[in-house]
Length: 608
Image 1 (cartoon, helix red, strand yellow):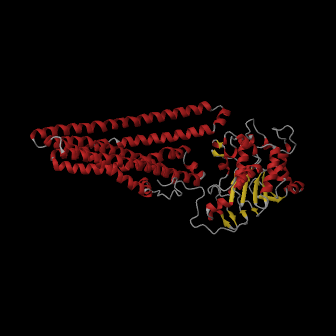
Image 2 (cartoon, helix red, strand yellow; image 1 turned 90 degrees about the vertical axis):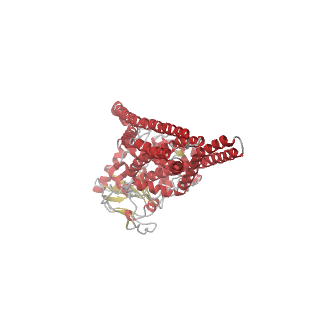
Image 3 (cartoon, rainbow, N blue to C red; image 1 turned 120 degrees about the vertical axis):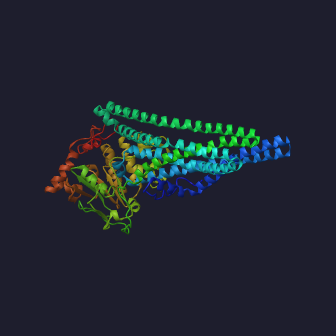
């Protein structure tokens, strides 16, 4: 088996579900070919068994227990060994086919979701994206897993039909025509089954999205007393999913029953006609055994064909859902022909606001409306082209949209205000680029004043961090996210409110250490906290329209007696006016956004 996951998920066609499935089949053509070969050998070995058994019966009746009977028994042993050995390989390749296809489509969806950014959730419910991985990719894998056995069944059916037509025309016709009739009758149920599966799939996606939204907003729902309302909506949608699932099961049960009944009736007809032929002397006893065996055997390829039809139908439905994700236009698409990268140390310029980040400077961005400064900061990293339309940002005179996106992500890193942590080993979660040693990890944690997290997580850097870091307080999560951003060590680092969830004493330590760690490298910090502003090289003031008003040092702007100085003091003064309520001894000058609840969650940050 090839190492999984594959290093490159590939570039799939997005024109139709059929083309998408064909593309995946070609990508795994090596294991698919082996699966088809093993399936054909296994089914042909099974098809040989009734013929060999019939010949052994005729040999025993004609000559008794002798060498001829032993020869046919020997051939039966060979057939049995072939069935066993080829069956092992067939099952192995079937599983590999399933894994390759399911994981391949999972990678495609994950890659698209990571590259598309907010564009995915703007176009599709979260539940649709989750279901594409948790459900649809697995159904596509089922079709690929069945391909080898289905092909073997078709080949075995054709070989057996040709043999029976040469032995007895009537019985041969009954079997060779009866099997397709049975398959056609069963196929009539596939279309209504597909329709019901489609509606069930859509209802399940809506349920997943509703559940995810309810859980993520549970705290807000509790605050406004809306738990019962949303729980009722979830219960109602659950019942809808159950009802649609029952409808799917009703058709499926009829189909499963007919898969047993119709081939059974065909076998009884063959046995009755064959017995009459033996009485007339047209068939030997051994041939009757062979025909009976084939009547029972051919029900197996029919079941395989029916299963393959169902799985293909499911795979097509699922492929369409996967295509819905793959067709989402990325929030920041890669340039068709990326421009040459500007040299290191180039200016980063936001032309809409007039902000210019000179190389090697630690700059703070201050605005009366924190949302305005946050939007400008995230614009510098080219996070979402739709939101940033008409506001060009250049690096060294080259538009960010014209640069290679992967290279840009390494040169410019934006750490947003809301920290997002992932489950896994703490050290691995910190080292997003996989290049830091333990000493670098500890140094970053010290700079972010996050050493207490090492005590909170059993095992420290080698311990497991739960999903979204839920075992940590809000301040701890923010400091871990800050350490992670520092470890990326980019040419330009943008930090949005990196200390909004910590107390004043912790903030003072972080401000001093971050400024020292980033000294000489381009850094932008969005904040209105004097404890941070005291340590930066330069402060840029924005108006509420997002335009640069003035620049200077924190002390210099406070001392200015013109209109710009007044605007600056009006913004920073609000932070200096209220003490830190988490620490009664905190001095005047502590920003008001230091207010936190008992769980460590920033109250004003949550309100925002």
